[in-house]
Image 1 (cartoon, rainbow, N blue to C red):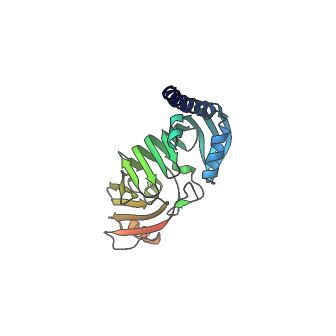
Image 2 (image 1 turned 90 degrees about the vertical axis):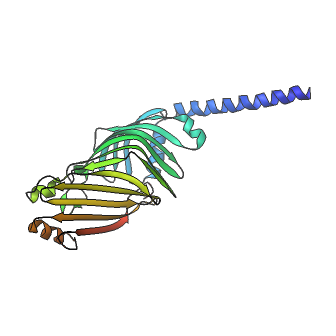
Image 3 (image 1 turned 180 degrees about the horizontal axis):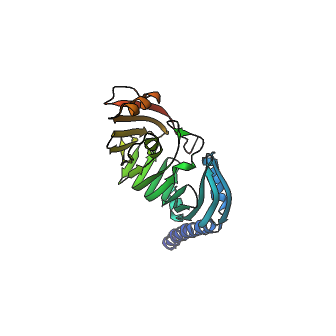
Length: 258
């Protein structure tokens, strides 16, 4: 009897574990999407969400904005099994605003993991700030097999970024377009973003490092064959000789915990 009781006890424990897992997934599937909105706003105080529909399993956040930038509508489909590993994972799509993107996002207390991502951000939606004295125009495009940032490390796989953000400036200077493109790598636990571009008047290079705490350093290097452009760059704070004018900045991005 003791052997049989032991077998039944082990079986009951297995059944209880399966039942508890099924109950958890069912509870998540039927919980309102408003819960996701509340969690997101607590994690990112600069985030605003106008409304919600659906459930935590499959829902939608509407009139979403971040730091005054209207992102549009965000639809998501949760992957409940991620909860069993301590992560919130979902397939996410954004549309109808400044951000048109899709990908898989997984968030845990110690990391953010983005996979199979592709997106385009409308830079003209940024109205509180300027880019070297000019309003933001154009777009920035990102594609990535994987981008992961944790408290102590990062990962970057097949990550590319491009932008035509300099279009307004080059137009003002009656210069050819100067699109920038490059990749994102993980170097010494930091994301390294390297963008380069060249036209008939010269070249430009942007290199930025972003740490797990969202602090960053940025170096913008430019070389122009035109004296008027070099003079304009100096007025913006670029230093060095005409063959290697550079501008440096450092600060902290407005991340999830700002």
